[in-house]
Length: 175
Image 1 (cartoon, helix red, strand yellow):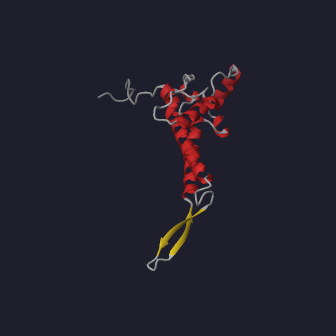
Image 2 (tube, rainbow, N blue to C red):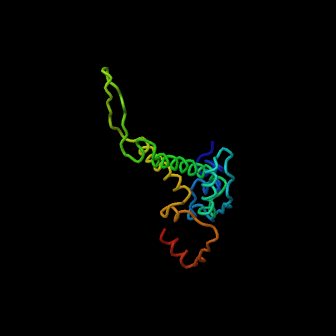
Image 3 (tube, rainbow, N blue to C red):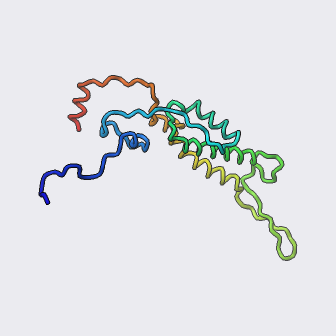
């Protein structure tokens, strides 16, 4: 066995730049030139309801310049959670529901004598709504729909300023 020196093709194979872009780990300063992923709006899944299809098409207006076909899972998550949130909010506004809009619901039980006891508890619609909003926040961040996350998503078509050779030289010198 050879000692010292370098073995040819030793070590793990390099991950393709396209995979790094999809995973969000691509860095131009480490991985070289920028890889462009073509933006193409994915087709909606067949299982979506009519309201979910309207939400899917509504998202197309706000984030279609940077969404690719591989983002359909995130789009499906946003659409599904938004539809569930709308259903919960409609149930809370239903005037015929006994606990609509109330943060407290009551659990009714009877004791051995036949007396009706009411125990206050949290309205499950409120806790479900909070859980859905928390889950929706992650999908919104992936798609760049909030102002904080939008700055991290690069929109194609924006022209970059040409790099000044002197600036590149100074940047390399700083490390």
